[in-house]
Length: 433
Image 1: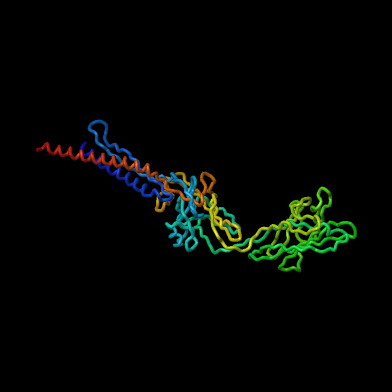
Image 2 (image 1 turned 180 degrees about the horizontal axis):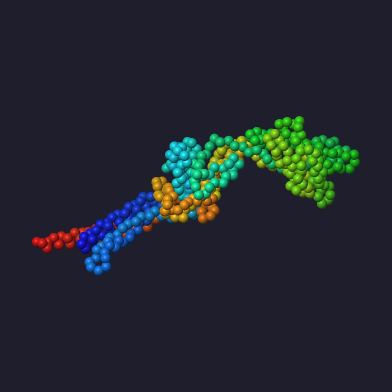
């Protein structure tokens, strides 16, 4: 019985070391696989003998575990949508085959890195067929509120490279100097004209026409102008008229002293802004705060549009897509504007090593891993997302080769045990002769 148990223990040793060699082989084979998590094999002894009497060998049993919480080093790349997680957390992805099948919401899988590029349908996918998932943004670039303990709000990120976009103008700042000599007695009273371009809701270009008419007194200087605003869509309609008075004191000479609203939106002295209605909606125009020289001024003898600034942009084509450290996907257009189109969260679990390992360095949450939660990247326990980067394999080749030598010696020793037991059984058989 004792000899037979020795034979069984030797066989168990061979099987356990063969399992360890298989995990070592897998680790070495994937030493150049981006995002690979190495497998660790541990041995547990089995004790089946009772106290007293002859000893019966129980042998050994091998258990394997994929160390998903061990990350590899990051390396830089030239692709803006090569992504890697620096720190805790994982990227949500789905199989492209599930997306194309359109059988409800695709199953969420997790990975730590990927080289994502747009396919024929615009989905950000890897060569292994994984589609990056995120929360879609609203037209104004804000992200709605989604549940963080479910993947229902996530959808595959689809980039429309032929997309056009434009932003309407909502704010204009007039930095204009009016000639002080035009408001003195004897001046010819010539009006000054200014056309400020704005972009409509459909990306069209129109103008707010501004006319500055000086008030010429009989004697002295009035330091007063009438500002009239019209829309180029219908120049016959006045959308705003204001009487501007400028200071001529030594301390604040040339700055606005007061604004009187004749028609249009009221002037706000606290902000220096007024609102006029153009064909596409309201536009806020900043003419400056009373007593300050940051917008309209009246100095010297020259009419000079010093600084005209506005928001909005014409229609443009999408040229590139990038993901920032917080997971926001930004589309850049040839007009220079950038718009947020998605947000990629980072998924965290209490026990990452409890997840189910699948092909292509993907993992699936399980009962052992605990419930997942979707965090904003760089918030909570999660790290950030690094673009232009990939995560290398977590395999240490030198350590695996050392383990291979140890495993080979242990395997040979167990084989020697079996050989010795065989010789002992042969000697037992020879007793009968």
